[in-house]
Length: 251
Ligand code: MN
Image (cartoon, rainbow, N blue to C red; front, side):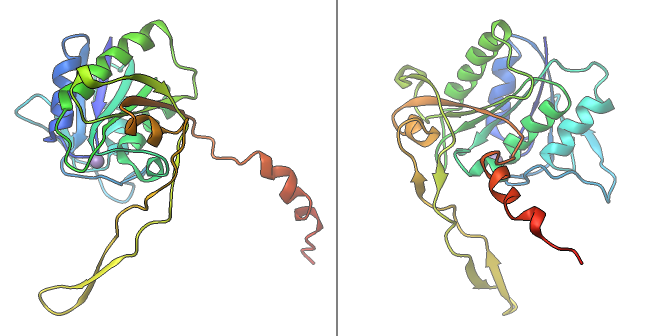
């Protein structure tokens, strides 16, 4: 099996290095990752600039683009041999609930899925998490499971791992995405030349974090595994908007 690894924290990130080390015991791996931290890059592709690719000392390939660029390039022509699967992470910090819309880690997995490959995004919970070995072992466990239980064609697994020793993990839970309150306010400040600058504020607190959610699983010591699909259609609302849309008169 040949696995493509990527991330959004950059090719030097400890999470990616740990993941590569653990998975290389079980599969052939290729690592194609951004040359710097591109967290929250979401599903962006670079279209107005060329992308440059460099081999690094540790055998990885770095790209001056987004996580989505990395996976796109890797699968559509950069790698000589097409991978069988994409694993993105281990992200430094959780990707829970609404975070998945912004996440470059989830985006890297999504790009793999778009291009026809099974894909997993894996994140280690916490502001400055340390137990990357736990998350790497979880990745190996899930890889083995997926080989015998293939994922449906449109499904990505979003995995969040509590930042504890593997022996303190209570188990695995299949979850749904929870929700956060709206983001905290933007932080206004001043640059050294007296000009106003803004920092995007922290994400909102958990709002829908009850039993069954990804938030609930990780806060109770379980690995959260949420199957994601890319179709964002709100099917329940099709009928509702159909009640007034056809009445619009375009003159
Ligand atoms: Mn990140």
